[in-house]
Length: 103
Length: 161
Image 1 (tube, helix red, strand yellow):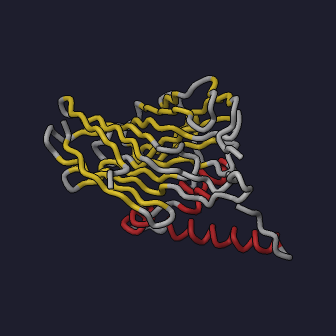
Image 2 (image 1 turned 180 degrees about the vertical axis):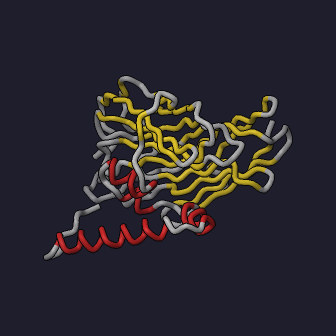
Image 3 (image 1 turned 120 degrees about the horizontal axis):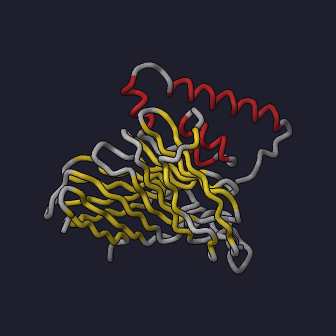
C-alpha cells in the first residue's frame, strides 16, 4: 500500500525545512452523508516527526484540521542524508509511518 | 457532540467541573517529570471544549496576553472554510508549544504543536472554519502564554452538511 504520508525535508545549512502532506479524511463527526446519516468522526490525533532519536515536532490535532492535512515547520541539528521518521495515529486506532531522507 | 440530556444536567456539569479541576490540580503538582509526562498525552479534554476560553484553560491552565511578537498569518477572506491556510511565526525565545484556536468552531481548539528545543517556532497548516470568526494563535514561551488574533471572513463554511 502506498504510504498516506508525503514528506519533503530539505536541509539548508543548519536548518531543515519539513513539509508534510497526509491523506486522511479528517471527518468531524458533524457532517451527514447523502442518506442523512452522520459520518462518524475519523481524524488524526497525533502526528510525530523524529530525527536522530529525538522528537523534533509533535502535532496534536482535532477535527478542525482540514482534510488531507498539510503542515510545515523547520528544525535545527540535522544534515543531508539523515533519516526523518514521520508517524501518525488517528482516533480509530489507525496509523501510518514513513521515513524520509533529508535532502 | 451532544450536550448532556440527563435529568440533572446541572449536577452532571458540576461533577465534570470538579473532575476537571482535580485533573488540573494533579497536573500542577510540583514535581516536573510528572507534568512533562502528562503533557505528553493527547489533550483530549481540551479538544472537547466548545469555547475558546475553556479550551485554553483545559490545555494550558492559564490565560494568554496579546503580544506583537506573535505574528499570525491568515487570509482576510477565505472562500472555502474547509481549507484555510494559517501560519504563525514568533520572535519569542524558549517557545515550547504553539496552538491554534478558531473561536466559533464547534470545538475551539484546532491544533496544538509541541516545539522541542532546536525546532524553529513557526508552523504553517490548514484549518477548517465553520463561519466568519476570530482565529487565535497562542505561543507558549518560557512558561507564559502570548497570543495573536485575526478575523477571517468565511464565505462558505467548512462543516459541510
